[in-house]
Image 1 (cartoon, one colour):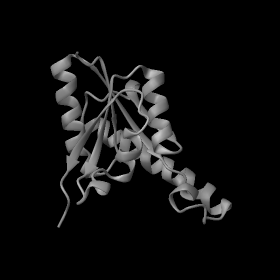
Image 2: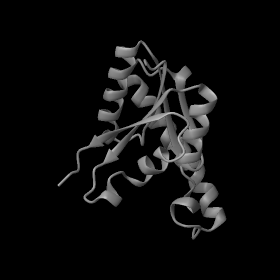
Image 3: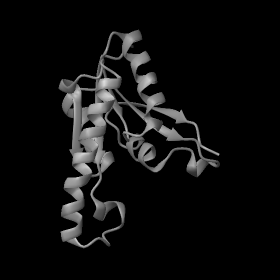
Length: 147
């Protein structure tokens, strides 16, 4: 069964290039729409709630601004990722990716995965979170680990 709408979730680092390449291949081979999402995770979530609120709010805006700049550069680098189908949101990655996939009617979510050793570490924490409870198929693209 072909895919019609592919959601690619990226971290906006250079490491996300293979994830975008794989999502593009899928989109082309299925004549599917390609959407992009990046989730800015609250500092308090990332550090277990040990960040003072005033610092967290200041950092939140800085994080969001930096993510928007990186997202804009990524769209310039990959013109097929239009602004119309690019999403930048704030929250818990798993919940936001699942919500967007449902809301947009996506058939598959493409994420990057660091193939760690051992079954328990097969997927990175975000990729693993996205996999569980996803409203559609999930493709984890293995990322090369830097030695």
